[in-house]
Image (cartoon, rainbow, N blue to C red; front, side, top):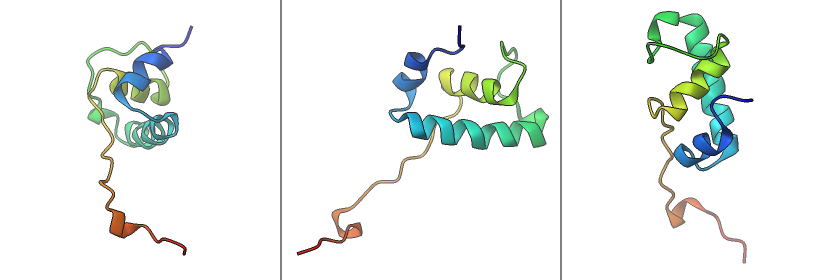
Amino acid sequence: MLYPPLNQLTSKVSSKYLIATVAAKRARELYDKPETALLEHYHSVKTVGKALEEIAAGKITPIEPELNESEFETKD
């Protein structure tokens, strides 16, 4: 059984791709600087699992840029 469950993660972050990207980035940060841990207790031993637990707990949230219509090119 995976922890945290995917449905718990997708309730916090809308895109599975974004979950994977944020978790990978945070896992690298946890690997390089373990003192930056945001939870007192983790179920997982691996940094990716720890990052996913932080996302599920709401400690890590991605910043999604606001898109303006002017940022898109239209092809006529």
